[in-house]
Amino acid sequence: MDVTHNHNLRTTVSMLLHLFSVLVALSTLVLIFAGGLVTSTGSGLAVPDWPNTYGWFMFAFPLEKMVGGIFYEHGHRLIASTVGILTVILVIWLWRSETRPWVRRLSYIALATVVTQGILGGITVLWLLPDLISISHAGLAQIFFCLTITIALVTSRGWKDAYRGSVEAKTSIDNTLRQLACLTTSIIYLQILIGATMRHTEAGLAIPDFPLSFGHLLPPHWDAGIAVHFAHRVGALIVTLLIISTTGHVLYHYKNNTELKRPAVLLLLLLGVQVTLGAYVIWTSKQFIINSAHVVSGSMVLGTSLVLTLRAHRDRFSIEKRSKTYKKQSPAGALA
Image 1 (cartoon, rainbow, N blue to C red):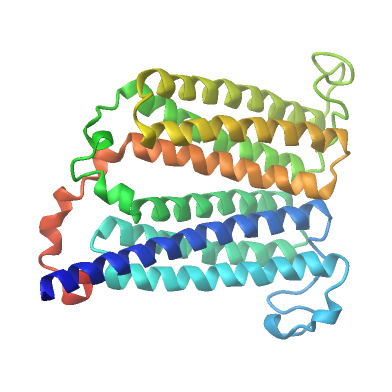
Image 2 (cartoon, rainbow, N blue to C red):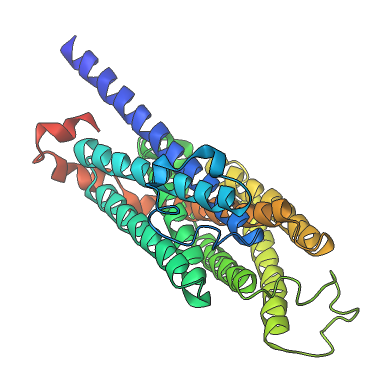
């Protein structure tokens, strides 16, 4: 009876931990959208001080004063603080209940990342939006999002159960898929960095038409803004080819493996959304909602590609190899 009760308790705690990690990941996605709104509306300096807001303690700032750009910038700060608090809770929870040391270490890295991200955000304001810091701030946000996605995935029951005899777990993954998935995820992240550079250097409309460039296949003239913008378009083409190749490989070789097929199909669908939004960013002259949605969908493409990559490498995260280590742990670790 006690054994059954303890098992049920461990299962419940594990499920709640996973759900909370999903909440952190979703909250991070909302934060990225809020950051996109700040950039898209030019509200980065609407609140000129930090960490306070016009001298007020952040959480005490009057709601009636949140108008215009202050609404976007202060709202972004509130959401960022919430994500930070949720991350601290997640780290403590994992420290108390997670039996895999590498997952706990991953949460520590996530905490260090979100703290660094907050400091970078403050420097961005105090130093009046320097391009390099702003781009780094955007890039680190994506890394933090990837960390939350990873924690949510590896704490899921599906991930753990895969080592206990499922068909997916017994499927041999070829090196081609592993390499394709890694390359695709890496290039998507690089493409996001180019997009961040384009946004923060005001090159979003350096080429004002799409799919052509000033009515030509290649821009008839060049400057720094046009070069960055065109590099983003070339990057989009490369990402498209890589995603099609990766998805095609999965659907052809692993059509019965839902663990791989689902993120692969979702990745292809999100690619279509991302390309469409990218086109509308140009056609609407960077309408701020569309522009921000484009940023968020880019994050979703990255996160989905990461899930596919991790699942393709899942046999290298064997639970059994680590189970011997946990027998030496304190009773606090028994609730994983």
